[in-house]
Length: 249
Image (cartoon, rainbow, N blue to C red; front, side, top):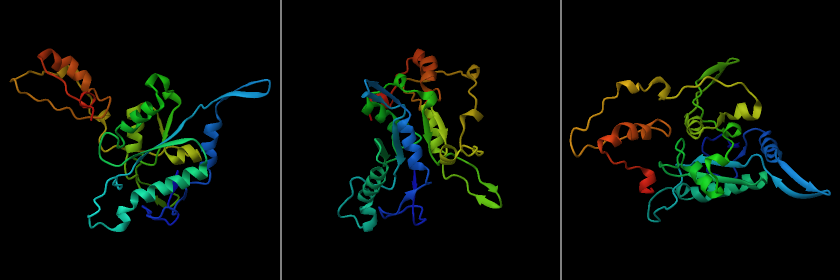
C-alpha cells in the first residue's frame, strides 16, 4: 500500500511515507464500492460489502514490552509509537473501514503462518465456509520473484516469498502490487523450499514403533499432510497427538 517518501527501506519517521502508487487509494475504494445496496422507495435499507479489506503485516522490528532500563537507541524504543502514528495517518487519509494485524514475533502469527488469518476470522465471527476463497485476493510484495533484466534495468529479486506462501496456506489468490494495481503480467518466482519438488510417496511408508518412549516430530506448513499421516500411520500404533490446537499456544 505504501512506501517510504525518503527512499529508505525502513523509515523511522511517521510522516515518511507515500502511496506505493497513486492508484492505490482509488483501487481500494473501488473494492469497497463493489457490493450490494438494498433500497425501498428510494431509501437505502441495507448495504453489504463484497470485499472487506484487511491488512496482515510482519513487524518483527517492533517490541511491545520494552525494558525501560535497556540501553537501546531511542529510535528503537519509539518504534511502536511511530508505527501506530503512521498507520493512523495512512488509514485516516484512506478513510475506509480497514482492520490491520501486525505480527511482532516469530510465532504462529508471522507470515506465512496463518495465525493472523485465524485471528481475523475470530474477530469477524467467520468460518472458512463464510469466506469466498475463489474471489479473495492477498496482495503483497514478498512473492519470491526472481531477478530479471527489463529494458536494460536490473530488477532485484523479492526479499521473501512469505506473502505468496501465506495465500497458498490460506487457499486464496495471490497477486503482487504490480499485478493487482497496475495490471502487469506475473513474473517468474521460486520458493526456497517447495513441497511440489518433494512428492510424498505413500506406498513407501513403513513406520514401526520401536519403543514406548518414541517421539515423532512433524515440521511443515499447514496442509502438508501432518495430521493425515498421524491418523493413518501413527494412531493405530498407539501414539498420542500433541499440537498447537490442544496446547492453545
